[in-house]
Image 1: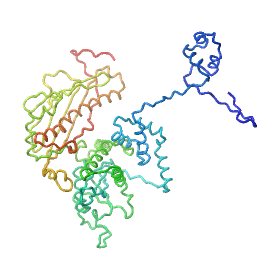
Image 2: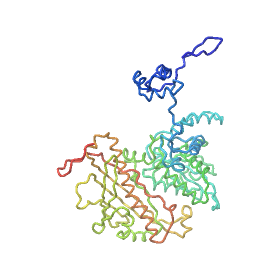
Image 3: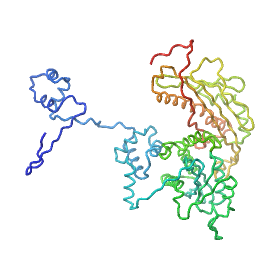
Image 4: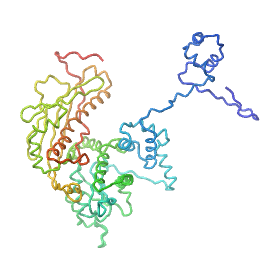
Length: 552
């Protein structure tokens, strides 16, 4: 169609009507259909142009030859309009990457939100490009473009440590201090709150880092604060003397203690950035007590290490990156990454040992609704339930043997299921549970002291679960990635069931047994089976007594 653009100057431009990509008719055919006399029926026009009569009827009713928009009038999204506005404002304010924003949105707005749905929401509102938002922020603030330098790559064991002031809570007489340690290679973080910003507190914090880190700490980088060094002491020293308690502990553990250059905090920028995340939480939340602040920081620490993938780690979480490094360089580690400091039991060790030794009483209660059949004096057969995907289901049974205590360690091993025919899976469950006596301190356990709990028990878990699954042969016609994903989902469901009954329910049952009802917020440092190591699925071996599996 030719349309004049101006009456004074004859300039012409061609404007094409909007036509759907899969349209069966052209604008010319549509116009002929509209101009056809009423005496010609829909069927006759449909035979003439080779289309359906409903198409003829549609174009006879319209006055134009353009296709209408196929966009739905109402978008089918899991987010409400108010939730989308909150997400957009958080994106503009905090400039969070997509994965970090997804964790916050699932935690506080919509747990069913998918990553693709969040990305579409950001695109609809024009805030999908984080670099453009950062440039707009810099232009508004008038800050020059900074020349950032990448951190040198290191293996696990290079730790950044810093200290941060915490706001004073209503039930506190003075503010406290947050000590933070982060590993350069894996971004694994450990933090603790201390009453004082002193050399003793810094030394004690480093000792706790060494006790909790699964890898060998070789280098520690700190600023020049007096809690870390005597480099700039009142005596006029310009070099560390080596007599500082922090330096003495480093020398004892054969750790190199490095100091940043004066007035160059960017050298320790990795831990400073994490402190910035903590500052954002402190500004966004309102805390009623010191215990409330402690609980929030503990939850965020667990989410950061286990749930927030980072682009610098190849979209892996710090724990996943630790596991990758342990597979590649096991010589750098002193313990398995799957070792998780487990649940806290608010009673002395001897009392909890008495409870565990009487497993005939509590095991059935904690295993419910799973069926637990006793085998011998210390064994049980657990029927976990039915799990599966894509029409393939399994009803796994696991035989567990609860060994008697040996040097303060309880072990659980796999035993064969008696009188059981061939199963389409093999399970090797090896767990160790060490009981560590703990004493409540005023610095970190105020809530316990308020309830007159002076001693409690910390349970350290070590879990090694190996599972080999046999799929029917017809399943292997499907893509390998689909089969592996199906097996991983089935295994994750199994592990989630077993680990919950052996940890959280045991903790709750014991506290109820001694008449101590603490509520959910007291369930500290639960054991979480994040991953299970699986073997490559293999076709089930040929067995003459087994019926042929149905065809796909």
